[in-house]
Amino acid sequence: MDELCINEYLNIKGITIVGKYFNYDKNIHKKDIASQISLIVELHKTLIGCNFNGMSRIRSTIGKEVEDYKVQIKKLQRHYDYIVSKHYTNEVEKLILSDGKTMLKQAKEALNHIYVHDYLGIIRRSMNREEICIGKIDRNNLRKNEGKIEIGIIKDLTYNLVEEDLYNYIKKLQRKQFDIDEEELIKLFVHGSHLSFNSFDYLRGLCSYPKDFFKTWETYKDSKKEKTNEEILLGLKKSLKYESKSFIL
Image (cartoon, rainbow, N blue to C red):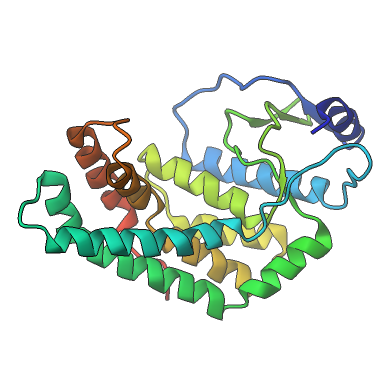
């Protein structure tokens, strides 16, 4: 990606690339979250129609999230079946046995919900509008300064469904254990972005998928030794607190 050309082009659009992440007050309130979502919406509207052809190669990740989830479910289902067949299980595997089946079921239902609610229509809209996401969308990387939008780092800039940025922001808030109403945030984003009902369903499906639980489970399955079993157990328990609920109506 030719970042210099992109920086110059975005500057014309009223967006400044600072080149580093921002320091910010970690004590945020509901009004701060609503304000950040409004800024995300404003950024997306500014980026729509930006034509980077001829100056850089921005990769497309449209549909990658869901496709990765389909593969992930199959792998973890096999691992769950393997644990069931074992004679001995440790504490991590005991938790997977007690909650893994439910999480796998919830994940399958989430993906099915996405597909039956015009997922392909969302993809067509995103491709037609050449929607762009910046990936890291919290106040550490996106802010407004003296009336001008500023982005810290653009290394994760991709062509993608705008819903993905909102989803990433919600996951960030969940991991930090903020008390949020995910449905309310989805509505705020979808209405502000003037998106269709299929966007509600797509985001509800994504938020029902136990992304963090599965990621921690994969760390254990792959035996990468990045974390101890105690750390993995804590990670699984923490993610269950905010991922064991479904937003599918």
